[in-house]
Image 1 (cartoon, rainbow, N blue to C red):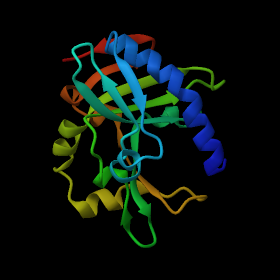
Image 2 (image 1 turned 180 degrees about the vertical axis):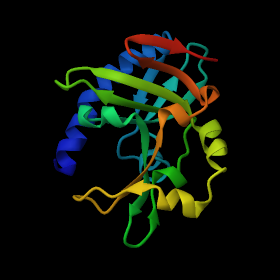
Image 3 (image 1 turned 90 degrees about the vertical axis):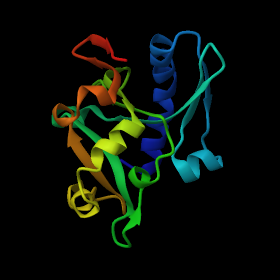
Image 4 (image 1 turned 135 degrees about the vertical axis):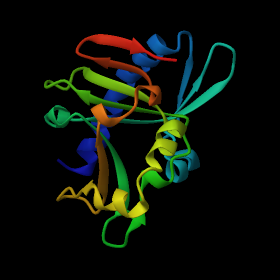
Length: 172
């Protein structure tokens, strides 16, 4: 799959993710940031305005179904693994991170989690920079590499809401 294929699939997910946001944050207004400085520098994909006019900013990623069996939260660690240029993990300027998996037909999102980014990054400080860099995968078609961690190892208090095995869980 090419970068362009991934980008098109990402855009295809947006209306589905928007429906999830409406479920989790009723009556919210959703604004996408693709291409502007928020996206390019801070990896902010979306701004959600809640019913009381406060705003939440987030990052989104939906992976192909072939990766669902790994049960991992996967985030870009190095934008360029050859130069060690840091990726989104080290530059997240978001309050939440939406991470999910497509169903096998790529018509719906089968499983998803909504993480509290600050809490996740603070929890991640238990790992050194070197450990994070060491625990990454290198896709063959990209210069980037991705940090991964099994969902079972992520504390519940970091997850704001999730949909797993057809069960919606909303945590405070």
